Image (cartoon, rainbow, N blue to C red; front, side, top):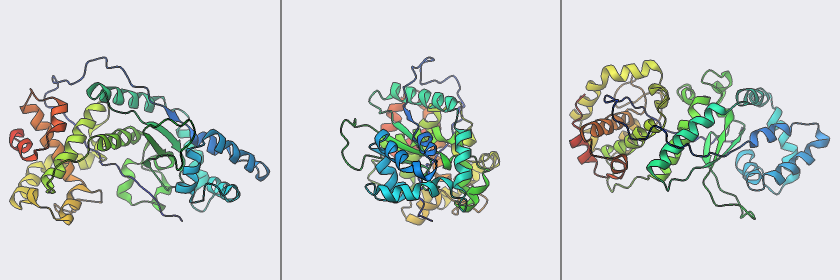
Length: 347
């Protein structure tokens, strides 16, 4: 099976201890989000062999930029080799060994209606553009990927006549079929399945755009700077998606969320005692910030990405204790030591 390409978007949660604090007007205008349903036309190409060439040609005509990208980066076939595409596409759509046929049928059912997803995305990007008028709203292309990709930025392989330059994101719907989807046992680790659900798409899309729009600017590589950078972005994400459950935005189970709340003080004390905040070793940063079955620096019972979660908690505390600071000022503040000091974070 081809190498799988995953972009796992790290997410966090927001719980306000001061619900009267608001950052957005009540009626922020939703942003228009364009979703291209390449997945529907691709799955409709599942026809008898004598029609496949015509259907492939239709896909090239309808999607002159994305179809070549899809062939080369998802199917692993040169875009110009139409014959090979015609030969491979039926297996890509109907393979039973890896469960593509069953998966594609589930995509058709689960994503027949995307109204709720569309509304969540338009609300989030409307709020983002209210904060940052220059923020770019991406065009989303839905696809099935043969378990090869979840979410990715893409650009045309070659300049396509008349193609507008814009931010484009591909979303592999077959990677968002529900945490309990049995076939995921064959392609991912158990801890990765938690966010492989329809409800995670909006958070993944918006967080990917935030990380791209607000890059890491510190000249320091300590854990403190890294966890506060991620924590600030996830704090903002939680405000852009106010209807999402806290633990779900974080990519945790309710049990993991409660474990963190119970042990927050002990976790922080351990980090302070070991001076982990000031460490730069890759193994320490990876343990605290990357996804995995647990956070090894804490314990095998600890949920992953605790560094990001603590960073979010510090950013939240900072905003609660500094009411004159705007969200834009928070995001622009590169002095992690200042944020920590004036957050008065004391779990």
